[in-house]
Length: 123
Image 1 (spheres, rainbow, N blue to C red):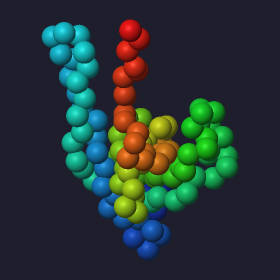
Image 2 (cartoon, helix red, strand yellow):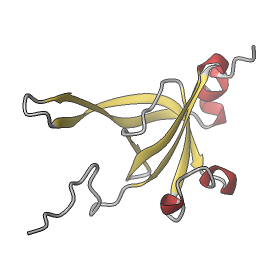
Image 3 (cartoon, rainbow, N blue to C red):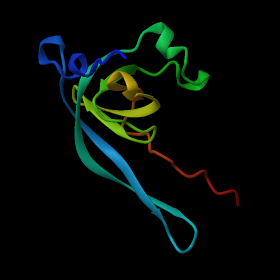
Image 4 (cartoon, rainbow, N blue to C red):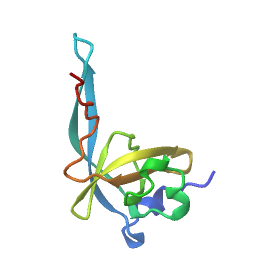
């Protein structure tokens, strides 16, 4: 099988250390899920997502700025990537570890957005 791990981690091809926030959480006795984020890093290549990559996103997320991340460690759909001074929410992830890398799409997560925000209360 083709091993592309050297491509994803080669600085001459644009690989760099990427700061991330991994989602971790636990179910509380009340039944609610309490989620927090732990800092970490992965090594990989980041570039703007292509039209074909954006077309795989849900329709409501296709108008957001999106990046593609090829890394040496898996990213989950609830993690965050820090790239060029912005925070990006991982929206799609794929395990290509048989070929030596992991692939994810991440959309720009602006300051007014909150992950897993609750809905408003109807009175």
